[in-house]
Length: 376
Ligand SMILES: [Zn+2]
Image (cartoon, rainbow, N blue to C red; front, side, top):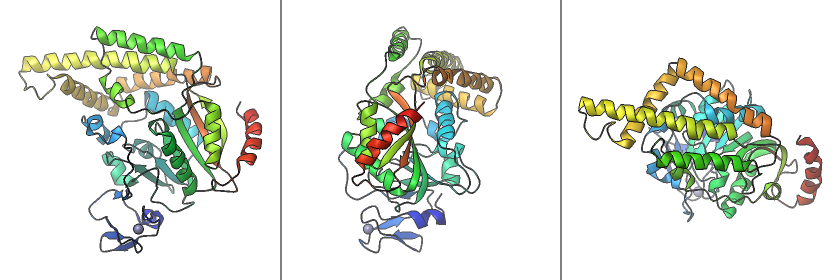
């Protein structure tokens, strides 16, 4: 949606001036650019200057199955991420929160509450229907946010940083810092390149998944597509401290995530279940004599399976209860390994009281030493 509260916060992405709102259209009084508003459930505020790097998420391929349109409850990895968000960044009345790289906007839907203003920004407009109806949405560039300075009390960004180049990561963090009020909090989930030895277990799980794929027990093509876009700009946790401090943040809390249970559940168990169900759907449609557009084709069958699974979850029956149980089991990864420094991490960044990105590295270093004790 496009609320009046959103219109008060948005700025021209090119010249950062407030926009004039007249006759169903927004216009920049400085550069004269117009932005369509009527009949839409999001604002397109991408900057004119085209950045040469674009994410493959723009590619329709990832979104061909249309699964982003409906929002299911947070389960499995999504459930873990959402639980960590709520634990690190409780969202309450009076908060103004921005989801940087919101994707379908499902996390905004899950965390919507009374007297909270939520805004989602993403590079592509593949928003869920429910998000479009209930949440303020912007198509924009994270490296040049079309939003006022200090507009938000909280921000979060999950599964985004790893898709950026080093330069873009620095730009994105500075922008996140700019749109936060002093003392504002920013929750991130991403990973650094340096792993712990625990990650060998993950590699074993992935090798097993590839082996099972070779004998046709599961299909990883969608995961490969999703990960083909990773640029992994962060070297290690020290590097994370450096790059966030330069952007004007301090890390106040961090937990690591080595999903051994999670990897087994999501990459093996769920994929096998999906493949078995897809085969059954294909067999059924062949005997029914459906066309090749339907579930008798591989991708078609998986689409049918996903739609079925979403329906079962919506019914809140046995499937939902089972997945809830598995999600609960997956929390073991945080309980057991959360303090072992490894690649994937959940971190809470706090905007320096002094604000901005200018020369506070000395302060940051000192407070970093203090935070090392807090990180337990
Ligand atoms: Zn302008």
